[in-house]
Each structure stands twice: as structure tokens, then as C-alpha cells.
Amino acid sequence: MADNSFGTRFILTTFGESHGEKIGGIIDGCPPDILLDLEKIQAELDRRRPGQSAIVSQRKEKDQVIFLSGIFEGRTTGTPIAFFIDNENKKSKDYDHLKDYFRPSHADYTYFKKYGNRDYRGGGRSSARETACRVVGGALAKQLIRPVEIYAYVSSVGDIVLEKNYKELDLSSIDANIVRCPDEPTAIRMQELIKEVKKEGDTIGGVVSCVIKNVPVGIGSPVFNRLEAQLAKAMLSIPAVKGFEFGSGFEGSKMRGSDHNDYFNEDGSTKTNYSGGIQGGISNGMDIYFRVAFKPVATLLKPQEMLSVDGTLKIVEGRGRHDACVLPRAVPVVDAMAALVLADFML
Image 1 (cartoon, rainbow, N blue to C red):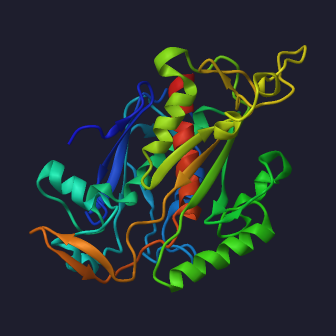
Image 2: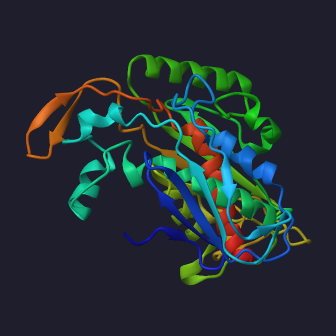
């Protein structure tokens, strides 16, 4: 299997399966003599790990990252940085009922057809468990791109939408509640909806919004390596993502150019920011913002019709530990992928 690496200068390669012994990765291209805050890297992993609240998967993983190389006395050496995370709380028997069945809208079927076999335990390599490795790489990348700041947060769950834009929010309060929505009344409604859906054995999707501050002018390039194009690729590589909307997005298509144009101030900043901080594929110094749409998780804890390996259809009841909504745990993954893109460009 190819295509397990992301980036061209700052390169993250990940390995491992959901129920294998370990997951991990190698970061290549990290400059030497960078003083790392390893506690901040672990803190980002703690934001993504399962079992952290009542509304996420109850798989109990410490997700403690162990670095094997590339760091000496707290500083990067310029050599590849290897790391791993143990899979400690595997309950593979929970997936025995899926050995011969493909879940609808899951990678089970396409993976099997492409490779001729599959690890059905938790989805194997196609599991979102792999995103823990992205969080390690992204957390390290964040420390390279300072003073750039990245703030991802949940802006909708189902039909509950945060009506405020990011400028009206206290972005320092994203982690103040378990939904990671920086507006407490909206977060409470989202939390209740997720609990209701979980009780029904069903799942629900939503949107993660992200704003990136302090990006200097000139990051990115025109034509094929546009900054927004690489951000789109990064976000669409995250499991369960079905949409990416940048700047004014689809709403901008309804406007006239005279209203949509971001007119300049004398210092080069703009009076509005419909461009989302990027013009011609290159950052313009304004805030970069985008939205990422996540579909409902395919694995349900209620009966649903599945296709068997021999081509028959059967109603199969779900078992195991799954997220009713991936949004709260997806927030640090969006953060991480944005950081990986910016580190790659800024190097």
C-alpha cells in the first residue's frame, strides 16, 4: 500500500492499524535545534483520544506518545523523528460479526475490493485511529510555525448551527466544554442532540470551522500548489470528511463582484475578508478561515442491512465502542492537518 505520507518538505508518514500492536509515524524534514515542548504535543493527543467524555467512543486509550529518534535533550537533531503510540484497549471480538460483512458507507467494501483482504477489527488501516499520528505531527508542526495560531471548533451538529462568526467568539474557550463549541448555550444544545442520537444507536454529522491567525503574506503559490488547494487536500484526507468550504465559500457565489471584492486599506490589509486570507493561492496576511463538513459515522449500534462477502444481504446489529458524532474529537485533527500544511509551505 502506497500513499501513507503527507507533505513535500515537512513530511509525515504514518503506520499501523486500529487493533494492531501500535500506531506511529516518522516525521522527516524537521529542522535541527528546535526546542520542543513535549507536554504540548501530548496535550493535543489528549484532546483527540477516545474515552474523554460521555459523548465519544468509550475505548480507553492513554494515547501516550513515545519518541524514538530525532530528539536529543529536548531539541530536534534534524534527523527523522520516529514515534509510536500503543493500542492498549483493543476489544477485537467486538468486530467478529463483521468478518464477512461490509458496513454501508464504510471503507470495508472498497478496501476489500482494492486489496483483496482487510483487517475487519475496527476498520484496520482505514480507521480514524490513524489520525492520532497526524495529531503528533501537527502538534510538532505548530511549534515550528509560531507565531501562527490555529483555532478549530465545532460550529454545527446536525441542524444545530452556531450562528456567530469567529470574530464574535472567544476562541480561547474552545475546550471549555466537551463538544468544543466556543458558545456555551449552543454547545449545550449540541451535547443534548449527540446524547439523544447515541441513545438511539444512531450517528450524526456536522461542521468544524477553523481560523488561522498571524500567517505572513506570501505563503503558497499560484497554479497547482495553491495554499487553499493544499488545505483542501489535507482536510479531505481526514476520515468522514465530505466537504470543504473556504472563505466566503458557496455563499460567495451568490454575490456580485462589487460586493465580494475585499477592498484595500492603505497598509495592505483589507476592509473585508471574503477571500478567506488567500488570493491567487497565496496568503495575503488576513485571517485564513474555512469549514469542514463531516458525515455521520457509518457504524451504527442499531440493526442495518449489510452486504456479505458472498453477495447476500442481511440485517446485522452493530456492537462495540463507536462515536455517535466525530466532531469533538475531529477538532484537534483539523488543527493538526492545517499545521502540517503551513509547516510544509513555510519551510
